[in-house]
Image (cartoon, rainbow, N blue to C red; front, top):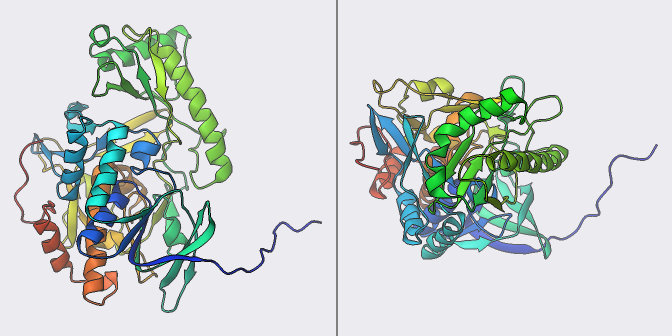
Length: 454
């Protein structure tokens, strides 16, 4: 019988560089983590697998910021401030930011142009002198003594290279860096099934006058098409909304599953391969249906994104796991580093189910504890974004871009504080981190007045 493994010869790996802070992953958490660490004067490198920033927001074509806003006692408020405000202003300056729009009559989201997001993110990092390495895929770590990461291995067009840092921040979305370093993790619900992914698409050539508020009538048209047997849909809750220009609309219509009906697992290569192909098939079917909707008859697909939109894979276990009860109960924490105003968004078989805190009776947001950024078992590592320490239900809410901005800014600031005090991130004075974040314009909850306006 042939061996099922191959021994790779030992080799000397070139050292790409040495930094104080290295961030893996250029999504919303990674963008602001790198920028906030560099703003504090730390030599910072951001490593990203693609040639652009934005994470699922650009690579998966999400084109919509969720979680920037909350419903506070019945009033819509933009809760996520700080460095996210700088990024939003840059996107808006490029004429790439929509006005916030209401979701389910309860909470706001805000659409953007993906090209503007990419450019604005470049500008933000350049303004803080962040070093960037694009087209570099994380491939493993070399551990040092005392539960510390010595180096991160990356694969580039120049071959395998190593990057050293004093503190690493895992913003990979999948928790890759943390898992390679030995941090414990979970995947999915109690049965190991993650949230379903989706393949986004954008259409152009829509007649905005004839289309009108088509997002209100499309669900009824879907029901009629299903009853007539002319179309089948992978899920009930379709999102079809206009971009900045009314002739271009974004479409979130798909739900990608394995043959057994469970969600594609985004850290299994064969699953990802099948998911990409199935996602495009579903996107084409959605487009063919939408061409029957008034105003969409002459539309065409202007963009299928570079990758499938992954909502959940690994969640790293840290000092605290944010839970669904925390979200619905609007929990407070002594070590809060910001807030999340997005509800639980459960992608269940064939549908999307939103569960909100009581509205308008409650303040509508939960605080996010610093402990969820600090993984167990690794001393010079922080984790921010959708792979931070949360339960399946908690992650169903706090995985969105608003909460990722919050976690990223806190992680970058915490790394800088740890370096300035010669401490590991787990042992920094949280009160000093909170004061730093407030000085930078972030809203962390606690005893602060709630921001005003959208």
